[in-house]
Image 1 (cartoon, rainbow, N blue to C red):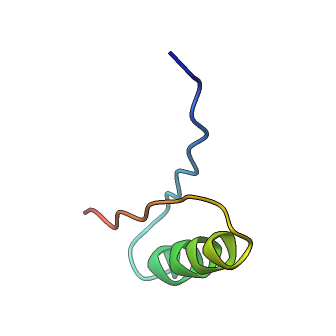
Image 2: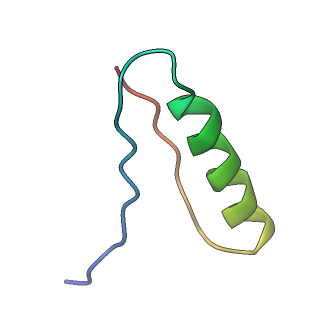
Length: 41
């Protein structure tokens, strides 16, 4: 089994967690990294 890195963003509502998470995700994809994005509440 491999270790898989995870970026977990937390904070109060309305501070931009989704926007930051999406930006990180798109930059990873642009860099050729296999990534997934889940925005759950």
